[in-house]
Image (cartoon, rainbow, N blue to C red; front, side, top):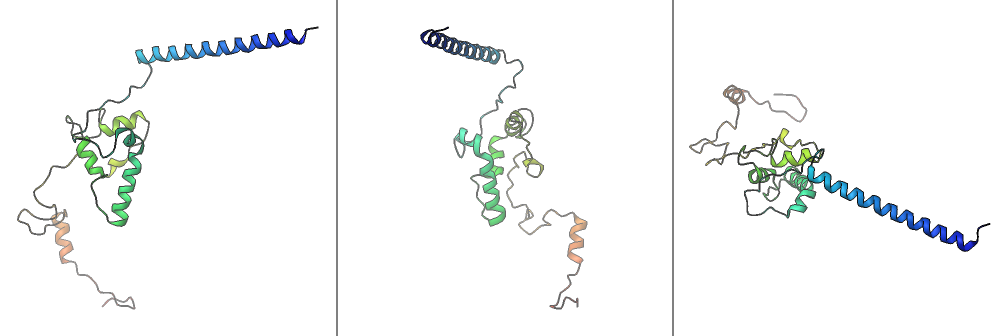
Length: 178
């Protein structure tokens, strides 16, 4: 029969051996990860892209990495739903500042937006509707001709002609046309 003192000593030794084994395993794992990181084989490289064109971003880098989508959604809601147009968090300003000097775009292999979204495995669908390249500044509003008169607003000449000649029907309260 084993005495109680011997049993306690055996359990203490086994507990110590288990703790030592866990420490050795964690040290080995950390060393393996460090060696793996240095060789970079099998790991997706962290995207590196050029700095923005402005002096500083609207918020610090860590905040923007984590919350840029909420800022863009909030700006979208303010603009589309409430008609409030500001430039602080506009996608147009982001593109103007972060477009690559080589490609003049935020898309592409080393593009500011696409490189991070590819790394994070996040679908990037902003640019299905929005421009990925900053537009060149024009000296006049796009709806105005160069002489300052109202233009066609981007309609093709046939569409413009048709829209000007089509009569508009008046609707009475009963719904019948006159």
